[in-house]
Image 1 (cartoon, rainbow, N blue to C red):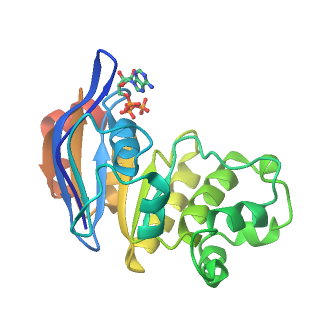
Image 2: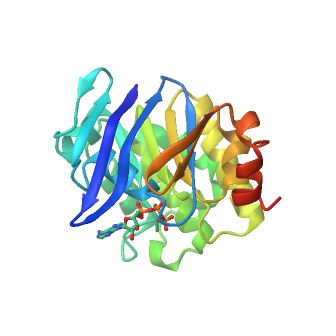
Image 3: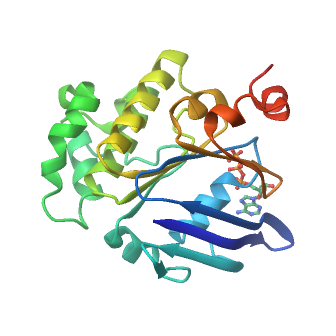
Length: 231
Ligand code: ATP
């Protein structure tokens, strides 16, 4: 479904991603965990084309999409829910969803699923998105991803700034999105939350993948426990 082959991302003299190779199969719920500045957002942004790939390749559904423009990738089914939510605060919940669904036919067919996951968005449908709570805004950001009908949904730090209860709710929703058939690539600093739902995990440090495998095994790795799980 998604393959990164020796991917590099550079910002001037800074190398943020150092030749990572990652394979994500159809139906996976893959998690990349790592600390601040490890290069997780740079990886996601390079996959979707928001920052240029300096070296290496991105394959999606068997095609080389390394230089494919972002809007074309969206139409092919590669959708990013960016860090920091990036909703339109002056538009209503409905208008935010409408804009996210612009590229697909019949985006409204996803609304039932969205409201099953996040009933509060139904209650807030005509409310300005800027007046939603942080958790509700994160739900809206994920809902925007859903109505774009992705084959692969990329999520950048969805737990950021949320209370433990909300983190659990958001992670549960991500699991349900995956169980419904969407491949997911989740990037998280919250290793504990991500490893609980993932089917495959990658640890990223200083721009490199230093460990990968079954989440249950990653979770008992001594380095991971000390560095990311507070053990
Ligand atoms: P965080 O969780 O804090 O977002 P991250 O793992 O997503 O961290 P990135 O945001 O990808 O990490 O950053 C990786 C490195 O690249 C960092 O050293 C960061 O300072 C640098 N970096 C990111 N964006 C830029 C940019 N636009 N210009 C210059 N350096 C950048």
